[in-house]
Image (cartoon, rainbow over all chains, first blue to last red):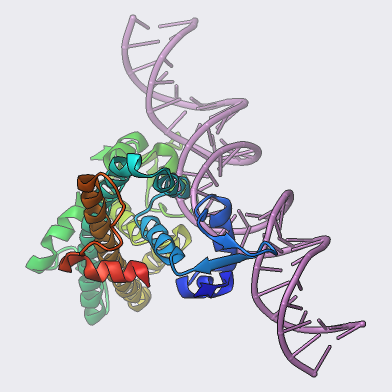
Length: 144
Length: 144
DNA sequence: GTATCACTTAAAGTTAACTTTAAGTCAAGA
DNA sequence: TCTTGACTTAAAGTTAACTTTAAGTGATAC
Protein backbone atom coordinates (compact mmCIF):
# COMPACT_ATOMS: atom_id res chain seq x y z
CA UNK A 1 0.00 0.00 0.00
CA UNK A 2 1.32 3.45 -0.94
CA UNK A 3 0.18 6.96 -0.12
CA UNK A 4 0.58 10.48 -1.46
CA UNK A 5 1.94 13.31 0.65
CA UNK A 6 -1.61 14.68 0.86
CA UNK A 7 -2.95 11.42 2.28
CA UNK A 8 -0.15 11.19 4.83
CA UNK A 9 -0.59 14.82 5.81
CA UNK A 10 -4.28 14.19 6.40
CA UNK A 11 -3.58 11.06 8.44
CA UNK A 12 -1.05 12.87 10.63
CA UNK A 13 -3.06 16.07 10.89
CA UNK A 14 -0.34 18.29 9.44
CA UNK A 15 -0.06 20.22 6.19
CA UNK A 16 1.79 19.01 3.12
CA UNK A 17 4.12 22.00 3.47
CA UNK A 18 5.05 20.81 6.93
CA UNK A 19 5.93 17.36 5.61
CA UNK A 20 8.00 18.84 2.77
CA UNK A 21 9.75 21.03 5.31
CA UNK A 22 10.53 17.99 7.46
CA UNK A 23 11.85 16.21 4.38
CA UNK A 24 14.05 19.16 3.53
CA UNK A 25 15.37 19.13 7.10
CA UNK A 26 16.42 15.50 6.70
CA UNK A 27 13.65 13.74 8.65
CA UNK A 28 12.46 11.64 5.72
CA UNK A 29 15.34 9.94 3.90
CA UNK A 30 13.31 6.70 3.87
CA UNK A 31 10.52 8.07 1.68
CA UNK A 32 10.67 6.88 -1.95
CA UNK A 33 10.07 8.92 -5.08
CA UNK A 34 8.52 7.83 -8.37
CA UNK A 35 10.02 8.61 -11.80
CA UNK A 36 8.46 12.06 -11.78
CA UNK A 37 10.11 12.92 -8.44
CA UNK A 38 6.83 12.66 -6.52
CA UNK A 39 7.06 11.32 -2.96
CA UNK A 40 5.52 7.87 -2.56
CA UNK A 41 4.92 6.87 1.07
CA UNK A 42 4.67 3.23 2.06
CA UNK A 43 3.38 1.45 5.18
CA UNK A 44 6.84 1.03 6.65
CA UNK A 45 7.25 4.83 6.63
CA UNK A 46 4.42 5.24 9.14
CA UNK A 47 6.39 4.18 12.24
CA UNK A 48 9.14 6.64 11.30
CA UNK A 49 6.63 9.46 11.03
CA UNK A 50 4.91 8.53 14.28
CA UNK A 51 8.20 8.35 16.16
CA UNK A 52 9.10 11.77 14.75
CA UNK A 53 5.74 13.01 16.02
CA UNK A 54 6.46 11.48 19.42
CA UNK A 55 9.88 13.14 19.68
CA UNK A 56 8.37 16.44 18.57
CA UNK A 57 5.74 16.19 21.31
CA UNK A 58 8.55 15.54 23.76
CA UNK A 59 9.98 18.89 22.66
CA UNK A 60 13.00 17.63 20.73
CA UNK A 61 14.12 20.13 18.08
CA UNK A 62 14.07 19.07 14.45
CA UNK A 63 17.85 18.98 14.10
CA UNK A 64 18.04 16.51 17.02
CA UNK A 65 15.36 14.35 15.42
CA UNK A 66 17.39 14.45 12.21
CA UNK A 67 20.36 13.27 14.21
CA UNK A 68 18.32 10.34 15.52
CA UNK A 69 17.28 9.38 11.98
CA UNK A 70 20.90 9.53 10.90
CA UNK A 71 21.92 7.28 13.79
CA UNK A 72 19.20 4.80 12.86
CA UNK A 73 20.64 4.72 9.35
CA UNK A 74 24.14 4.14 10.64
CA UNK A 75 23.06 0.83 12.13
CA UNK A 76 23.84 -1.21 15.21
CA UNK A 77 26.83 0.80 16.44
CA UNK A 78 24.46 3.63 17.39
CA UNK A 79 22.08 1.50 19.46
CA UNK A 80 23.50 2.80 22.74
CA UNK A 81 23.17 6.43 21.69
CA UNK A 82 19.63 5.89 20.46
CA UNK A 83 18.69 4.15 23.71
CA UNK A 84 20.16 7.05 25.66
CA UNK A 85 18.15 9.52 23.56
CA UNK A 86 14.90 7.79 24.43
CA UNK A 87 15.86 7.45 28.10
CA UNK A 88 16.62 11.19 28.20
CA UNK A 89 13.39 12.10 26.46
CA UNK A 90 11.44 9.83 28.79
CA UNK A 91 12.90 11.70 31.75
CA UNK A 92 12.17 15.03 30.08
CA UNK A 93 8.54 14.06 29.50
CA UNK A 94 8.15 12.90 33.09
CA UNK A 95 9.38 16.27 34.30
CA UNK A 96 7.03 18.03 31.91
CA UNK A 97 4.09 16.03 33.22
CA UNK A 98 5.08 16.79 36.80
CA UNK A 99 5.29 20.51 36.00
CA UNK A 100 1.92 20.44 34.29
CA UNK A 101 0.39 18.74 37.34
CA UNK A 102 1.61 21.63 39.45
CA UNK A 103 0.28 24.11 36.94
CA UNK A 104 -3.03 22.27 36.95
CA UNK A 105 -3.22 22.62 40.74
CA UNK A 106 -2.77 26.39 40.42
CA UNK A 107 -5.46 26.57 37.74
CA UNK A 108 -7.76 24.54 40.01
CA UNK A 109 -7.12 27.02 42.80
CA UNK A 110 -7.83 29.97 40.50
CA UNK A 111 -11.05 28.33 39.34
CA UNK A 112 -12.10 27.97 42.95
CA UNK A 113 -11.08 31.59 43.56
CA UNK A 114 -13.21 32.93 40.71
CA UNK A 115 -16.13 30.59 41.39
CA UNK A 116 -16.23 31.92 44.92
CA UNK A 117 -15.83 35.51 43.74
CA UNK A 118 -18.61 34.92 41.24
CA UNK A 119 -20.91 33.64 43.98
CA UNK A 120 -20.06 36.70 46.05
CA UNK A 121 -20.46 39.05 43.09
CA UNK A 122 -17.04 40.53 43.91
CA UNK A 123 -13.41 39.64 44.49
CA UNK A 124 -13.43 41.87 47.58
CA UNK A 125 -12.60 39.93 50.68
CA UNK A 126 -11.02 37.03 48.79
CA UNK A 127 -7.66 37.76 50.44
CA UNK A 128 -9.12 36.91 53.82
CA UNK A 129 -11.30 34.04 52.59
CA UNK A 130 -10.81 30.58 54.05
CA UNK A 131 -8.91 28.55 51.44
CA UNK A 132 -10.02 24.91 51.11
CA UNK A 133 -7.34 22.40 52.10
CA UNK A 134 -7.02 21.04 48.56
CA UNK A 135 -5.97 24.48 47.28
CA UNK A 136 -3.61 25.47 50.06
CA UNK A 137 -0.47 24.12 48.41
CA UNK A 138 -1.26 25.95 45.17
CA UNK A 139 -2.03 29.13 47.09
CA UNK A 140 1.38 28.93 48.75
CA UNK A 141 3.14 28.35 45.45
CA UNK A 142 1.46 31.41 43.96
CA UNK A 143 2.24 33.63 46.95
CA UNK A 144 5.91 32.86 47.47
CA UNK B 1 9.66 44.44 51.44
CA UNK B 2 10.73 45.57 47.96
CA UNK B 3 12.87 44.01 45.26
CA UNK B 4 14.85 45.07 42.21
CA UNK B 5 14.20 43.62 38.78
CA UNK B 6 17.40 41.62 39.16
CA UNK B 7 16.23 40.02 42.39
CA UNK B 8 12.84 39.15 40.92
CA UNK B 9 14.44 37.75 37.79
CA UNK B 10 16.63 35.52 39.92
CA UNK B 11 13.68 34.38 42.04
CA UNK B 12 11.62 33.51 38.95
CA UNK B 13 14.52 32.03 37.02
CA UNK B 14 14.20 34.40 34.06
CA UNK B 15 16.41 37.21 32.74
CA UNK B 16 15.85 40.88 33.45
CA UNK B 17 15.36 41.41 29.72
CA UNK B 18 12.48 38.96 29.78
CA UNK B 19 10.81 40.84 32.62
CA UNK B 20 11.26 44.17 30.83
CA UNK B 21 9.84 42.59 27.70
CA UNK B 22 6.81 41.37 29.67
CA UNK B 23 6.39 44.84 31.13
CA UNK B 24 6.52 46.37 27.66
CA UNK B 25 3.86 43.89 26.55
CA UNK B 26 1.56 45.07 29.32
CA UNK B 27 1.90 42.21 31.81
CA UNK B 28 3.17 44.36 34.65
CA UNK B 29 1.04 47.49 35.12
CA UNK B 30 1.03 46.85 38.88
CA UNK B 31 4.79 47.30 39.30
CA UNK B 32 5.80 50.63 40.85
CA UNK B 33 8.65 52.93 39.84
CA UNK B 34 10.82 55.14 42.00
CA UNK B 35 11.64 58.77 41.20
CA UNK B 36 14.44 57.71 38.88
CA UNK B 37 12.07 55.52 36.83
CA UNK B 38 13.50 52.28 38.24
CA UNK B 39 11.05 49.40 38.75
CA UNK B 40 10.40 48.65 42.42
CA UNK B 41 8.71 45.27 42.99
CA UNK B 42 6.71 44.61 46.15
CA UNK B 43 5.42 41.42 47.79
CA UNK B 44 1.93 41.83 46.36
CA UNK B 45 3.44 41.70 42.85
CA UNK B 46 4.60 38.11 43.39
CA UNK B 47 1.18 36.46 42.93
CA UNK B 48 0.71 38.38 39.68
CA UNK B 49 4.05 37.16 38.39
CA UNK B 50 3.40 33.58 39.46
CA UNK B 51 -0.02 33.52 37.83
CA UNK B 52 1.57 34.87 34.65
CA UNK B 53 4.09 32.05 34.88
CA UNK B 54 1.27 29.57 35.36
CA UNK B 55 -0.64 30.83 32.32
CA UNK B 56 2.55 30.76 30.28
CA UNK B 57 3.15 27.14 31.27
CA UNK B 58 -0.40 26.42 30.16
CA UNK B 59 0.63 27.74 26.76
CA UNK B 60 -1.36 31.00 26.80
CA UNK B 61 0.22 33.61 24.51
CA UNK B 62 1.42 36.85 26.01
CA UNK B 63 -1.29 38.97 24.43
CA UNK B 64 -3.95 36.76 26.05
CA UNK B 65 -2.22 37.05 29.41
CA UNK B 66 -2.22 40.82 28.93
CA UNK B 67 -5.93 40.61 28.27
CA UNK B 68 -6.39 38.76 31.56
CA UNK B 69 -4.44 41.42 33.45
CA UNK B 70 -6.60 44.09 31.85
CA UNK B 71 -9.73 42.26 32.89
CA UNK B 72 -8.46 41.99 36.46
CA UNK B 73 -7.94 45.76 36.43
CA UNK B 74 -11.45 46.36 35.13
CA UNK B 75 -12.90 44.86 38.28
CA UNK B 76 -15.86 42.71 39.25
CA UNK B 77 -17.74 42.88 35.94
CA UNK B 78 -15.04 40.66 34.38
CA UNK B 79 -15.22 37.90 37.01
CA UNK B 80 -17.18 35.60 34.70
CA UNK B 81 -14.74 36.03 31.83
CA UNK B 82 -11.78 35.46 34.12
CA UNK B 83 -13.37 32.33 35.57
CA UNK B 84 -14.00 31.07 32.04
CA UNK B 85 -10.37 31.72 31.12
CA UNK B 86 -9.14 29.56 33.98
CA UNK B 87 -11.70 26.84 33.26
CA UNK B 88 -10.56 26.76 29.62
CA UNK B 89 -6.90 26.67 30.58
CA UNK B 90 -7.56 23.91 33.08
CA UNK B 91 -9.14 21.84 30.32
CA UNK B 92 -6.25 22.65 27.99
CA UNK B 93 -3.71 21.52 30.58
CA UNK B 94 -5.62 18.31 31.23
CA UNK B 95 -5.50 17.51 27.51
CA UNK B 96 -1.80 18.31 27.42
CA UNK B 97 -1.14 15.95 30.31
CA UNK B 98 -3.17 13.22 28.62
CA UNK B 99 -1.18 13.67 25.40
CA UNK B 100 2.09 13.57 27.28
CA UNK B 101 1.05 10.33 29.00
CA UNK B 102 0.54 8.79 25.56
CA UNK B 103 3.87 10.14 24.40
CA UNK B 104 5.49 8.71 27.53
CA UNK B 105 4.06 5.29 26.71
CA UNK B 106 5.67 5.43 23.27
CA UNK B 107 8.99 6.49 24.77
CA UNK B 108 8.73 3.60 27.23
CA UNK B 109 8.16 1.24 24.33
CA UNK B 110 11.15 2.65 22.45
CA UNK B 111 13.31 2.30 25.54
CA UNK B 112 12.29 -1.35 25.77
CA UNK B 113 12.98 -1.72 22.05
CA UNK B 114 16.52 -0.36 22.30
CA UNK B 115 17.28 -2.11 25.58
CA UNK B 116 16.38 -5.37 23.91
CA UNK B 117 18.34 -4.47 20.77
CA UNK B 118 21.29 -3.54 22.96
CA UNK B 119 21.15 -6.90 24.71
CA UNK B 120 21.03 -8.60 21.31
CA UNK B 121 23.79 -6.39 19.92
CA UNK B 122 21.58 -5.64 16.93
CA UNK B 123 18.14 -4.35 15.93
CA UNK B 124 17.83 -7.29 13.49
CA UNK B 125 14.86 -9.44 14.33
CA UNK B 126 13.16 -6.76 16.44
CA UNK B 127 10.23 -6.68 14.00
CA UNK B 128 9.39 -10.25 14.87
CA UNK B 129 10.21 -9.93 18.59
CA UNK B 130 7.54 -10.67 21.14
CA UNK B 131 6.32 -7.30 22.46
CA UNK B 132 5.56 -7.21 26.20
CA UNK B 133 1.90 -6.58 27.01
CA UNK B 134 2.61 -3.22 28.61
CA UNK B 135 4.05 -1.90 25.32
CA UNK B 136 1.49 -3.32 22.93
CA UNK B 137 -0.77 -0.25 22.93
CA UNK B 138 2.18 2.04 22.20
CA UNK B 139 3.39 -0.31 19.47
CA UNK B 140 -0.02 -0.15 17.79
CA UNK B 141 -0.11 3.63 17.99
CA UNK B 142 3.30 3.87 16.34
CA UNK B 143 2.43 1.43 13.58
CA UNK B 144 -0.96 2.73 12.47
C1' DG C 1 36.60 62.11 41.33
C1' DT C 2 36.18 58.17 38.92
C1' DA C 3 35.15 53.45 38.17
C1' DT C 4 31.72 50.01 38.51
C1' DC C 5 27.35 48.15 38.57
C1' DA C 6 22.53 47.81 38.14
C1' DC C 7 19.28 49.97 36.27
C1' DT C 8 16.70 52.60 32.04
C1' DT C 9 14.83 52.90 26.87
C1' DA C 10 14.23 52.12 21.90
C1' DA C 11 15.28 49.56 18.31
C1' DA C 12 17.38 46.01 15.92
C1' DG C 13 18.57 41.09 15.80
C1' DT C 14 17.72 36.08 16.62
C1' DT C 15 15.62 31.52 16.39
C1' DA C 16 12.59 27.72 15.38
C1' DA C 17 9.19 26.05 12.89
C1' DC C 18 6.67 26.60 9.82
C1' DT C 19 3.92 29.08 5.73
C1' DT C 20 3.44 31.32 1.55
C1' DT C 21 4.64 32.43 -3.04
C1' DA C 22 6.07 31.75 -7.67
C1' DA C 23 6.99 29.00 -11.25
C1' DG C 24 6.71 24.70 -13.01
C1' DT C 25 5.48 19.26 -13.97
C1' DC C 26 2.30 15.67 -14.69
C1' DA C 27 -1.93 12.70 -15.00
C1' DA C 28 -6.82 12.41 -15.50
C1' DG C 29 -11.38 14.00 -17.06
C1' DA C 30 -14.72 16.87 -20.32
C1' DT D 1 -6.89 19.87 -26.36
C1' DC D 2 -7.50 22.13 -22.37
C1' DT D 3 -8.46 22.63 -17.67
C1' DT D 4 -8.11 21.08 -13.01
C1' DG D 5 -5.84 19.45 -9.13
C1' DA D 6 -2.06 17.45 -6.79
C1' DC D 7 2.30 17.33 -6.84
C1' DT D 8 7.44 19.57 -7.27
C1' DT D 9 11.27 23.23 -5.88
C1' DA D 10 13.63 27.38 -4.11
C1' DA D 11 13.21 31.27 -1.81
C1' DA D 12 11.02 34.67 0.71
C1' DG D 13 7.82 35.79 4.48
C1' DT D 14 5.71 35.11 9.13
C1' DT D 15 5.26 34.72 14.10
C1' DA D 16 6.19 34.52 18.97
C1' DA D 17 9.11 35.23 22.38
C1' DC D 18 12.67 36.69 23.52
C1' DT D 19 17.78 38.74 23.25
C1' DT D 20 21.11 41.98 22.15
C1' DT D 21 22.86 46.44 21.35
C1' DA D 22 23.61 51.22 22.05
C1' DA D 23 23.28 55.05 24.63
C1' DG D 24 22.32 56.88 28.86
C1' DT D 25 21.14 57.59 34.34
C1' DG D 26 22.12 57.19 39.18
C1' DA D 27 24.01 55.25 43.50
C1' DT D 28 27.83 53.22 45.76
C1' DA D 29 32.98 51.79 46.45
C1' DC D 30 37.74 53.07 46.35
